[in-house]
Length: 360
Ligand SMILES: *Cc1c(COP(=O)(O)O)cnc(C)c1O
Image (cartoon, rainbow, N blue to C red; front, side):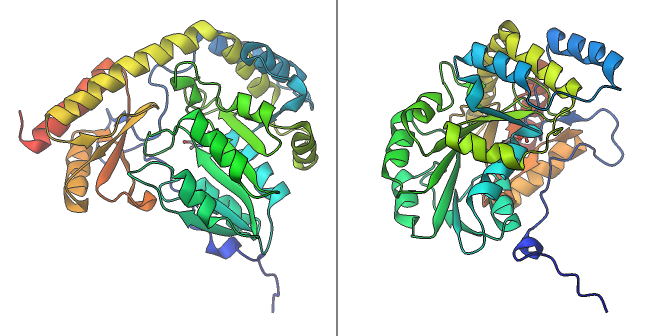
């Protein structure tokens, strides 16, 4: 009889559910379920991808020096304190693996990103869920939830799937008041959509207990390639580098990400297009009677009367070949998360929802 048993916590993990990408019987689907950039990657990134094809036989760089240098130059950071991963998910995983374990508690918030409790359980720690206030991270509630066992607090800012954000001063107040030895992970997957935001970089510089994470999956349109990075105090980055596999990123990933981060004109264009279409979509939804908080990211959270209405609208959208994200798993059963598409995508989803509401 086999005695092979999984480590504590692992069997309690509910498998991550990703945004659907197909509807049975439909060929022309509009996918608005995974917060992808509707325009794809920029030309510089695409060119770098094609060129990388000539060197597929070469092992990649292990220290990611060129990519870290590019990120540091573009964002005004110290390259020695950047760590790169296969998506920011891997960087979040390094943090969980290095700084939490059995008997420890890891805090995340009520509607927080579903990877946080998964990562906590994967290292045998206990995920602790903290209430939000009006779908927004509540700093005081987090501080009250801290115990002697707390090791990590994960927040996404802007948050997914709510799209809400807390001001820099609130993040700073959280970092300032966490008990000694607790790491604040500031997940900036949507930072680039916020004009002028540094994603928490200034706080990382000022404090010893803050790690920020960023991704190439959202505004850069590279979700399929899996690249993310983290920035933190040197001592913490040095710890995390020990668990990172030397070849965790391919040369293709590294070169495409480098081209993408340097192509600031494309990033800026995408930010402006997103902001314009997001506001158009949000106010149009409100006008037809669908509530929607102001969003700081590349999606909106549409709120319906109840779970039944959200389900029925989702079914109607599927029938129209449009895939949005059900977020009942995020304790938002009456909501649908809708990625901001290109202009025709936004018009198409609005039209279908208006039809559902009987407005036109
Ligand atoms: C999309 C997303 C990520 C990034 O995922 P990658 O692994 O970088 O693709 C991280 N955090 C949040 C909140 C996200 O929505």
